[in-house]
Image (cartoon, one colour):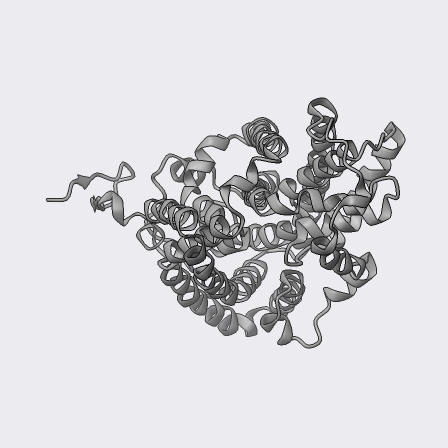
Length: 446
């Protein structure tokens, strides 16, 4: 007979589910079995790639409606329209500070550990065929192109395209217009809120397929690249993972502590989403769930709608650490001595190029190509050295980016007095509210 748990908030008793019915347990098991299939039957593992791709496509299908409905109802519910600009300004200040800090951390660690020292690689001997496609893509991602791409062709095309920033722009403009119309637009706002209930229920349904997606993606990764491919560049991979872990626990942990919550409790609260990101190597696969859980944890809907999708383009802590660390690794491996001035120039260029390639598939590697193509002292051909292990580092990039955006959402909400601290405490202690407007119940997600 199943155990009965008593909700300390005074709500009715909830029947505890068996452990194997929790989403995070199912995803963890799927990752494990996927890795086994990929290792012992590589061909089968590669053939399972469509499972992971199909799940990510399913999630991307729902991202635009989630952002649109969350943001317009949040903005329409604001008492003052200037609150939108205030929240956006605070979010971008946070993004700029921590993104720059992540780049600096990558530089410092690369100079201290020097993972590429002693390799003595001649760039002329490297096979650059595998990286040529990334360099070509990077060449077409200038800042002007990036800014122009934010503007959709039509109002509706933003919701059918793949650009999160286009959805964000249309949502903000529509929400402002809805708020300015006022009381006559109340039925429209009510309609969107009701549609939001249905959409978030759909998110809960789609998340049931998460273990299948994680299984297929992990089986493909191990089957295609093989665990043994990590051996040659284990130092770089280990350095990157350790640096990202320190950044999350120390830097983001300090930001979380100043905001009044524990980074470890937040990670535990988001364990199912983090395992999904790990299994699929894509932080986008957990974006709808992150928005739902941040709102459930007491962050205002308008803050969640602004910070999360914007952070997915401008707050890429893991990608920034990777960029400077990988760039210096290549320089060290090819015996290129970078002066302090060269490294500062690299830092400044990385700050700009990381925004130009935002939202592009394979953004981490493409952004690195864009950066190195501007820094003449570091050979772009050296990217061939890390191509084989980039997939494994992609998982760490996605995890760090995801945690960084979760922290940013809570911090900006706290900064803007738009955070219900009691709801946050209850959520991080494992006792979130049982109901939430426009979102599924905890049972739906777990």
